[in-house]
Amino acid sequence: QEVADRHLRIVITAPAQFNEGTPGLLSVATTSVDRRPLAANIRYTVFAAEGDEVLQSDEARTDEDGRAIIELSGDALKPGARLEVAADNGGNAALMTTRLQVEKTRFATQLTTDKPLYRPGETVRYRSLTLTRFGLKSDREIPVRMRILDPAGGIVPGSEQTAYTNQGVLSGEFAIPP
Image (cartoon, rainbow, N blue to C red):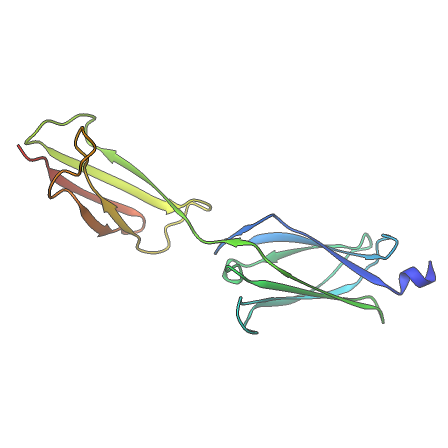
């Protein structure tokens, strides 16, 4: 047991992937090599994908069960980020490094129109809402491209438009050719 206590183990439990820009939690456990919990001081640092740019760094202490919960800020969660955790329980130290799986921000758009069916010559009025798929935020202008398809699946001439959302919202109208 004395030999086991001199060798510190770090176990990190985290989601399979984080979402870029969204805060995330992970658990750090410190144990002896025979898996008995050991309280320890930990220091964790999140580095950018390339180089040694520090995105987040802080210290914590595991409890008597050898566990600590760490919150990673949304600013630290970028694709390719690297997590480094150092633990020390009074003379015995361990270091663990891992890449964080961070998914790039993806968006979803919902489009509504003022009526369900249109005839040639009528005006289509539309409104769209574009938000991040995880977190449902609209923290930037998003380019949205729209086009109207005819019954055969072809693009109606002059119907393609590209515009930028304002806080996730885009609205406009389009006259259907006679």
